Amino acid sequence: MESTFPPEGWQTSVKDGRTQYLCNPPQCQSTELVLVDDLPIAGLSEKLIRSGAVKSDTIAKLDRYVAKARKGTYQAEPAIPVISEDYSGFRHKATLNEDGNVVFLEGQSIVQGSGGIIVLSFAHDQTIAEQNLNTYLSNTTIKRPQ
Image (cartoon, rainbow, N blue to C red; front, side, top):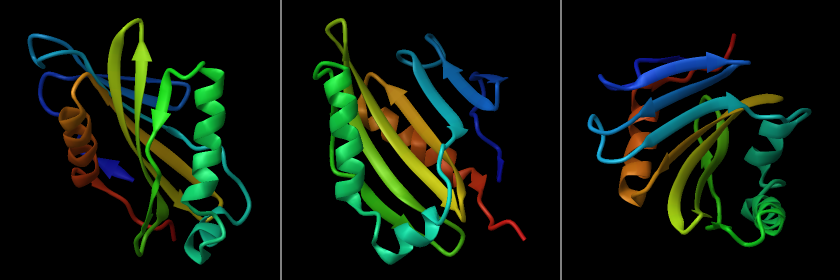
């Protein structure tokens, strides 16, 4: 996977395999964050997604556990399956309520074989969170490993 993200003015840091792209005011209206991290999966993950054995309701169960652990401050919409020639995964959308501030999350899991990554975009505006995720994905080449 190769990416030309981030846009000019964003700060990039890499630690323990996690890449963080951060944009603060005045470059951005408010703090915006895009995270790229390993997705802890194994086995036949992609095959199970492609066959429909792992569906949106499976992801919804995980989201309910997160919401419970966060005492209701996390609310997720149903995940949308994404299947392409080079990967499978899900599109994610959620809100986090932190100290009275709403943070919007847009995400994309990218699963190839028995491994994967997740790309998460956080912003105080849902449109911006979605735009940043889409910008990352449109500036990233994802090819199946040979």
